[in-house]
Image 1 (spheres, rainbow, N blue to C red):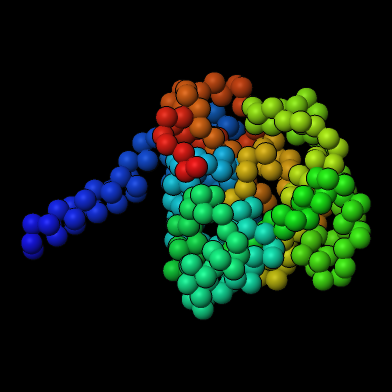
Image 2: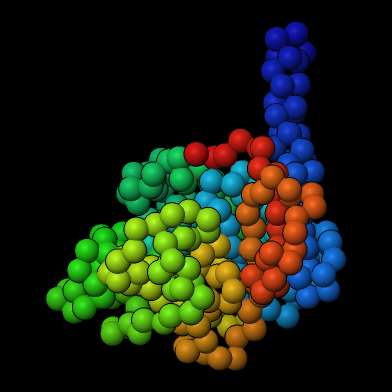
Length: 294
């Protein structure tokens, strides 16, 4: 092999090794019920009976995206029939997403047709590549952004003005507004440690997110018996068994659900687990110092 080609090959292998393996040292998994540290293989055993596993993430967490890929790969190896449900994609993106997964269009065409924002998308790119390789479905679970913005400006009642074709992209109306600890945090002006400006209509736009993801997971599972669903969503949409979970429970209370909350913190090797009591079944704390995806 020519020296320059050998050097390129070594660089490729080094980069591949870094992305695949070095990030494995930058997170810790805790079973909050047993109050102990576990590894990802043990996590797999503990979620074996779950119909829907919610992976609550911070959207720009590089380590979190690495873990999602590992978890998805292991679930497919163990169970075979696993569907991804993704907050990152909305129901109007489902046709180009299906076309891309089927190989009918390439990635560039998918990005253009779905109008995907690249800095956000690149964190989920490997999941879609895996789904295409495995020939497994991906649920574009969120409500279209234009309707979320409509609700943020004018409240959920504004959805009543939409025509029939638009309403097909949404969960059944009217949507009940549920209020738990997540709502209390929102009223206090804090979400996931970030200050927010509170309005009732802005809260209702988050309600639309939750109801849409629940409905699309329910619709999928109703039609595709024997599948498990791995939901990739922001931590706010599943922490404390709130967000999506109450809406899914209203649709079918028989589903067994597992909750993972994954986030970065400076004390990722020895976090104060008492501070996260009740947050999720499993907590994955990632290295705060690792570069974000955006």
